[in-house]
Length: 142
Image (tube, rainbow, N blue to C red; front, side, top):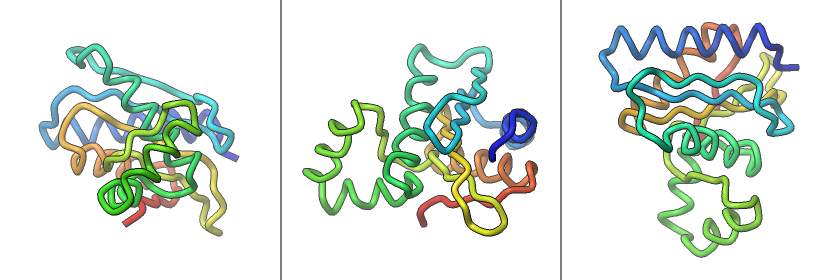
């Protein structure tokens, strides 16, 4: 189970990673395996809809069971499928890197983190750093 303590550690570590690397302000959403919002933060200076994008990255990953890097590849190769999947999940699917599945050490799905605000690769790197700091395994979909 993804605990609140895991989510808070992940969030703090992801923000620390981003600050040290000089990333632009981020919005971070942590969802549990059901897709319910467990924790959220938006740094000062994020643009208006960054939170919704972060949630869409995480929600899409949980809904499809793959990291958003894989969803990005699918969107390039099968755009009609990803468009239909986005509709099927209620529109909350953002198929670009930055939505990372959270797994326990045995590989069981615990949830996902979505980050938006810098480049998609940097968003993903902050997510991976946060998940590692919580002692969990990141699945980017690579």
